[in-house]
Length: 268
Ligand code: KIV
Image 1 (cartoon, helix red, strand yellow):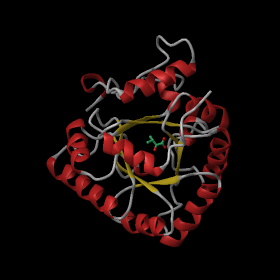
Image 2 (spheres, rainbow, N blue to C red; image 1 turned 90 degrees about the vertical axis):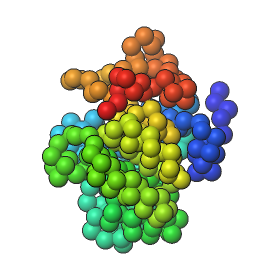
Image 3 (cartoon, rainbow, N blue to C red; image 1 turned 120 degrees about the vertical axis):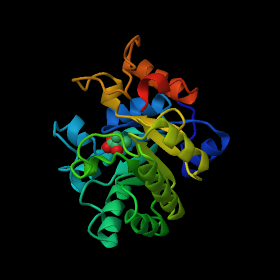
């Protein structure tokens, strides 16, 4: 029996204020939504990583807003209490603020509680518009997969002083525009730690070290079903677990008590 209260924006702010780590996993369907929610995951990210994980594509770029809306609806129907974040896919917010608003509204109608969009600088005005129209926004900086070609592949971002400064400035701008969460992907642990200490909103790291306010992993990676070489920042929580549910519970517990990630192993 799951007795926990629904995770709301207010609850996420409380957790941040209290220093409680936020445990997030990607989720793309109703069955896993039910399981992850029941295992205590705070937020389910309907990531456009589904293009690679579910559809077998080589990047997230081909994913459409219709596909994101479909999977967001699936997750929302399986979920009871977790906070649901839905990714705005490539091309769904770059054209104009009006297009972004229309597409974000599609995801919210399917049951998202918040939308996520990638990048800094020009995105701040989009974030502001969505927030003013009542749509909570999660920002995403560091390695942003929709820009994989512009970034020259899967690389750690913010390694040198100047790049780290730009990243921190963009994070401040996004928070000032009303973003309520910030995903930091493939960022040196020291940079993410320092930014987390100064930023007013929680940071959710993936390959960004233990100093973030919370962590996210791609579900299939942490269950060890993705295949190929394991990524440095991923841990296979099925190792030593008797079931998927106990692997997820272990992930939540280790994020909460700071055992995952281990900066000596999983960070840059
Ligand atoms: O699409 C996704 O799964 C993501 C995470 C990698 C943060 O954006």
